[in-house]
Amino acid sequence: MWLKNPLNMVTVSIGHDSGRDRERAQTSDRYMLNASALPDNVTLCDSESRGRILEMLVSEFRTTFTDVEYEIDTQTRIVNAQAFGLGSSRFVRLYRGFAFHPLVSEDALVFTLLHETGHHRARGHRFAGDPRLACDCAADKWAVGLGARALCRCSGRTMNLFNALDSLDAIIASIDAGTGYVSAAPTKRSQRPQACWAEFWPTQIAAEQRQRSGADRTLLLFVLIGQRRGEMGALIPIGGGADAEITGRLNAAFNDSNIVIVRGVVAKENLFDGDHHLHRVAYRLGAYPIRTYSGDDAQGKWFYFLKNILKDATHGGVPTAQSIKSILSYATRNLNVSRVVFGATQGAAGVEHYIYPNNPVTDADIAALVDSTGTLSVALICPSPLPNNTSPIPNQQGDIDVDSDGNIIERPPIKIFTPKSLAPPVLSKKKRTPPKKIKVKKKATKRK
Image (cartoon, rainbow, N blue to C red; front, side, top):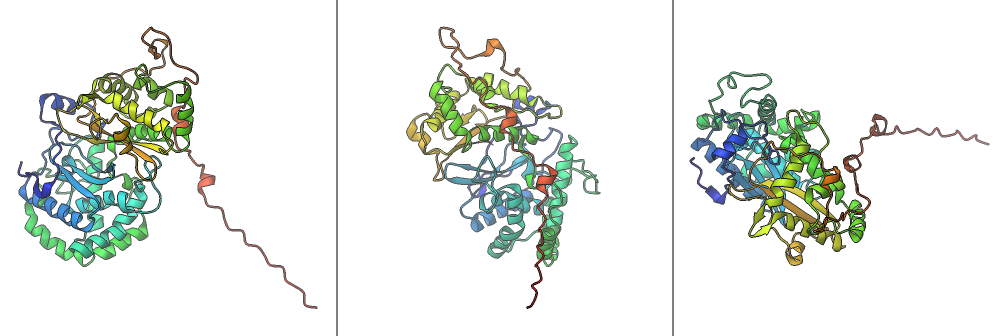
């Protein structure tokens, strides 16, 4: 491939071209703990033109938004874009399956980068599980407003928002259909899927210049008509929802209020010692998916991952399970930790799952993960999608944690939380409707 780390762009390889990863990619599992990956029959646009456009965009965004680090993953076929934080650093990453997809236009790349930057820059509502990141609606509003104007002032870059949304609609529809190219309403271009718009880059520049005169009006129109799609803020959700559900329940179990409950349990029973197992702890905390995902046993795969993959993973000579237990033990022992926020991001091939950076286990290393708000960030680096192997929910009598002598060490409450108790409340239509203002009639005063 042409791209050789221009502008110090990070190239993160997960090795989908290897035999094992190709076999995994051909299964129904398309996720990072479930992340959407392209089928092998989809040809990406690896032209020099596309590469130069990405170079320019990354350079413009780095110059405009200097507090955010931008990365292009040039190896994996993951179809996604992601905003995340590691320690005090803030990142935006485009994965190759998205950045080089023939259905993704230049306008879509600009909007996606703005949207992901908006998660870091926008004010207002935050994600419940990670207060560092703005919610999708806030990120969208920032992207088409403050973000777009800042980018235009600094670099002259504008976009046609409707073109961007058409492109994103097409790629999301193709993923929903399980193909690389099919869109809900195929156009002539989508009927010729091998043709990449970047191959005609000189004419694209001229077309873009013609469009720029109406770009600001398009952005304003978008703000006035609201979101074009109900799910636009999510772009292409990681794991199609399964990962979001898992991290959401983990974050809820260790949020500002529930971490107090966990501390009370740990005071009587050390959940994070060597005799307790992560799959069992996750069951007791209610931190597992219960929703139905078409063609995917998310719950079974999650427990298999905890029981068989994460249990044996090591990094830098440190078991990953030990690092996770050390981090959670630190969080329950130190009152300066207000909450624990979990996340997952793509890592390099040939490296097992680990906690960034380098599976920390000492109090000093873990303390560095706590920011000024009391948020302890746990970033799981994932090298490859999960296999389709599953394990049953660990509520059997034979799957209870015991000590080295076989004595049961679990103490009530066995179920600390349930998945439903960790789910955000669903407001009724009546509660979602703002109350009407009651007009108070003024009594007429009689003149004496």
